Image (cartoon, rainbow, N blue to C red):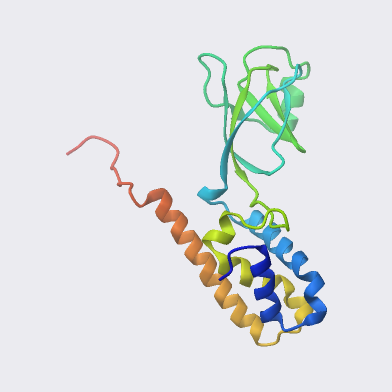
Length: 202
């Protein structure tokens, strides 16, 4: 059973059959995590945090930030804030006067709010999968889809592993694991929903 970081490394060692790659196994796992973070967006990756802008309306994004879903101001009578690109910010808010923040943009690892305000911001975003380490030995992805971790990491190892025909097998198992994860995510989001036809009832 692959239920923690050590068990995953042991399984990878068994499948790779290469003692000279043992020291590289943590890198293969980290490479898979990075690829997963680039490709996948699932309900398990969703988080909500409260951010506090400084006097210039700037706040740091969370360390595990990948992509925003919604941004809302906690100011009275305000709602969801609108994203604007940095070039529009420079043109429209060159002095960024104070006021109720209605817009935001993202540059690097910072979010800017416009007009500038220190009113707290509620950020709903997609977060990176918590990386497996000797300290953080498990996470939601390993618990939910250990085969995705195993075969994804094996594929990351493939260029060094001289695995031959096994690479195709690893790819088949990985695709199956990812398809199962996507299906499970769709079920969690929409299985209880009902389609509703909008408009007047005939």
